[in-house]
Image 1 (cartoon, rainbow, N blue to C red):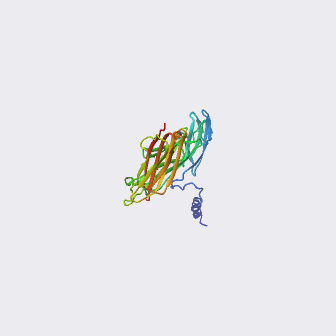
Image 2 (image 1 turned 120 degrees about the horizontal axis):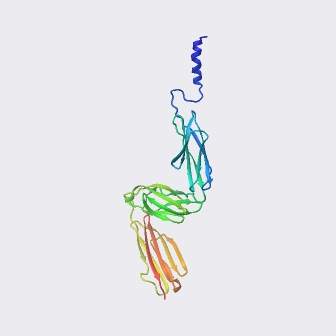
Image 3 (image 1 turned 90 degrees about the horizontal axis):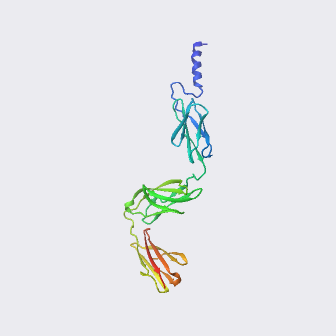
Length: 313
């Protein structure tokens, strides 16, 4: 057998059956893999050990440790460890990145440590609403927010402009749009708990009002006493609405604030006018607020409110 042929074939065969390391001349592009271990809870002013485990097809050169976005240490020798003194309460975000001998960096491994006692948990929220607005009637954008100790408020923004603050559920933002609002909008909701922790979410939608759609709102007229009622008896509160297309619904609400407390009466009519009987006695002295909202067939709406007093001597 030709000995020189065997001498040449042997190293070629060994190279083909290699152990996973890059072939000489081939760049190493494989990233290291790193995991991170740390306690979930720790006492304020205590010390903890953060441990990273890193592997690579060629070799790990170092592991970088971050607290938040700040690089606090680099360990070049296994076991890769970071001793940490906890001087401030709150949620501490730890991150480790491994670097191999070719300069490839791993995906970061993260852990969160709760330091000390207190509420550090941010609320959770889901922002929802219509994806396309095709009416000038009021539309609702809703936030479903939860927190381990309770939600304090939800703030709504468009850009840097605050639109509303809602302090109790349901967390609803009601908005109306005109032709001038056509196009894409992004609203932002920020939920806060009592400790000041916050979380936010955005919602993007499109206002798609048509040039030839009915944008005319109904017109409302309320018939209520212009001066205080001073004589007992039964009065009638009147209301009527008109529209270029037609009124399809009236939402009526009467709020009475008297010595008996606050009473609210609400009902809906599928007609364009109506009356609300109001029996009045001295015991019912107080302030009355009548609010009527009219809707047309295109979803346009108009609202009118009137306030009057009952002052029977």
